[in-house]
Length: 88
Image 1 (cartoon, rainbow, N blue to C red):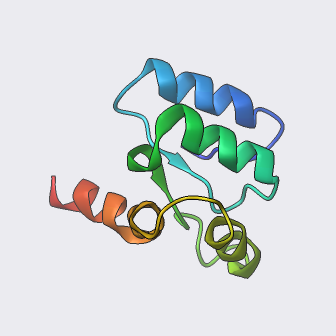
Image 2: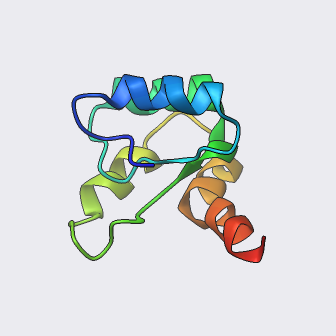
């Protein structure tokens, strides 16, 4: 599910209640929303860029790169999590 838009916090709440929901954060540009997603769901439930090539992803990449999370968390968000979905 896409996390962006006016109901971004609502997306976190839905994902928190439903373990099978993952959120795409590539179009979330507010740092507080990204931090809320990581804090509430952990990096295992976040994916990046399912909308590509419809949006320029450079700002989104930067926003995740500068978050105060581990390199392992960033690897999960940028590809490892979605790879698990495709293997399932």
